[in-house]
Image (tube, rainbow, N blue to C red; front, side, top):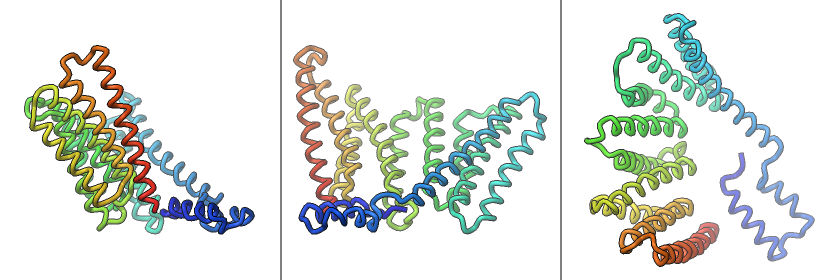
Length: 317
């Protein structure tokens, strides 16, 4: 794989070329030695891994769809046998290939999907009458052992996604008890905090794209909470969102410099500022209001862009 410090390596190489400490004829060799670009073998490994993952996931879904498409033609025991045998084969592959992490991880993901398929098959066959949210919640509960032994960030993301889906369906079913945006905002914010604090201890959780994805989801539902609170006069929602915004800035500017997180924060601040201006203006849809919103968007957007570009240089220094 490519060195995780490839960006710093590129900057160092650029400085050497700029200060004429590296001749032009030596640049190609320096790039090759520094492994800035993927080699042919690295590309082959990447494509092979990607195709293996796509094939594994496609195989799992193809079996589930095959049973669904041939529901009337396949006998009851045959349906259960197909998916249970497939699950056992996936678990056997996990045990068999002890030295191949990719096969082991893919086997766990596939078997986790089969668990969900088996639970859906059971519910559809015996018509248990359970609410839809219970399927995904029970799926998440039953597959906790899979997630714990996987030591694989994708498995944890799938598990968090199952919790999101079950909580969303629960709040739609019992909406009077729990608001969907509030529930998902709190869940994903909590998941982000736990994930970020655990990333130092468990290196397999320290994948920037997974943390960034959780931050995006948290920011998305946080904005909905803020907008709902702003236009329906619910000060508690505004206060909670402000606490979230301050915490995001402190953690990813003062504690851990993360430009992506600060870009998410900047976009959230920009949207929140526009919404606040719309709320306080006496007439939000006249020409003057649109002019103010335009100036705010351009001015604040330009300032935040310049600020983020400065942070990128600081991160590379």
